[in-house]
Image (cartoon, rainbow, N blue to C red; front, side, top):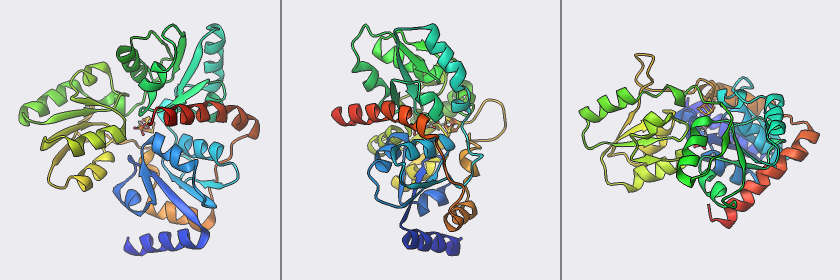
Length: 312
Ligand code: 13P
Ligand code: SF4
């Protein structure tokens, strides 16, 4: 593995390439990356990189977002099959019809969408900035929010809005079991519960902190608790454990299996060997239809501009 890691780094310097990784990828991928972050941080970083090649270790929509922001760069993903159940729960054609059925609404889409869905969106958000961006709109703005019904419901509850929600969900976050978290709390009475807003409201109701992966990581670093039960994809535990070696992080289990943690099978398609091959052969490369990209960049830039103004 050390050899592969060295070869990956050598190819990066030879080709002026950078590796970006989401917190849900395997620990070894995060360790070899130039930059590890949540969806917002990855988009912000991509917008400023000078590298000729960007390898996005994450899922397909993340690569697309980077390609839209950096059309002149070569954007690679180690495995094209790394899609996202949430993005797939919102096909662009059906979402477009939904938008047309509800004229007069501002359309807000979670970044976990395809480029084609972003193209019919007014503002993109991530879980790091969604509440603040919705709050920044006048109170009486009618809003359509897609695709995640759990995140949308959470934003409604925080902002007091009544956004019209697309009925989509992430197959990983939907799986967390409130009962199993309650059980874990009994075994670890002082533990704090960290929950991603894509989880169901029965799970969110148990949270000491609800937030994006980056927000949960920050909370785990700053909070004095020694034990944390983490209800999001278990890849984040790698950074948490690295940042806080003396604290204990317990992955919250899914409801339907005997497995102790909950993994995104798409994120786990990214392996060191595929990353190496992808850098070596400069394939698979992300392609976004320029006509779609031209439309999709507007709501992404709107998100980046509002986030900058709000200091996010
Ligand atoms: P973040 O916005 O926390 O990076 O989450 C992205 C994601 O895919 C959650 O499932
Ligand atoms: Fe998509 Fe869910 Fe995987 Fe995140 S965890 S990338 S929302 S399938």
